[in-house]
Image (cartoon, rainbow, N blue to C red; front, side, top):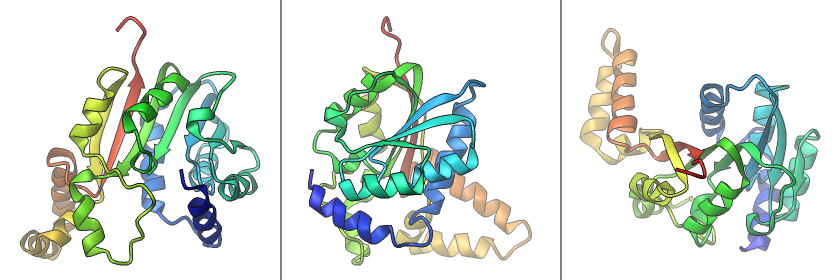
Length: 243
C-alpha cells in the first residue's frame, strides 16, 4: 500500500468543511438501521476509515448503539479520525496486520476493497474479524464503469490501485465465506448521463404530474434490477462454521 499517497490525500481532505460523499454516508446509515437491529450495544469497525467521516456519521446518528473502532494504515488519516471522533478507538495498521481482542458485530468497508491488490484475501481477512452472525456493510464503485468513469471524469484522480469489481465479481468472491443478504447499486446518474436518450426521458418525466415519483421508480429499476448505479452496496453475513 502506498501510505505516502494516503497521508497526502487525507491531509487535503481533512480541510473540507463537510464529508466528500454525504450520499454514501446516508446509504450506510440506512443499511445499519435495517440490518443492525440488536438491542445490545454492538462492536462496529470501519476498515480503511480514512479521516473518520463514516465513524463520525455513525456516532451522530446512533449515539449509543455502537462501540466504534477504525483501522487506517495512514498515520495522517488515523490521527484525523481520532480527533474527529474522540470516542472511537482507531488503530494505525493495515488489515493484514490487525489483531482484535474480540470479534465485531458490524464491519464497514466503504470504497476500500477496490484499492487492495487481492480482493479475495481481503474478504477472508474481513470474515475472520466477524462475530457469529456478524455483518459487513460494503460499498464500492461498480466495475462496469471502471474505464468509462476515468475517461468521462478527467478531474477524477486514480488511486495507486483501482481494482473495481462488478456485482457478479463480488458475489462469486463471497460465496464460500459470506452470505449475501442484499446486493444492488445506488447513484443512477452516471447511467443516465452515459445514455442521452434515457437521460432525456428521465428529465421529461419530472415535468408531468407525479413525475418525481415516476423518476424514483425508474431510478430504482436501474439500480436494483439492472444493477447499473455507479456504486455497489452490499450487506454480507458471516457464514456459520458448519455451513
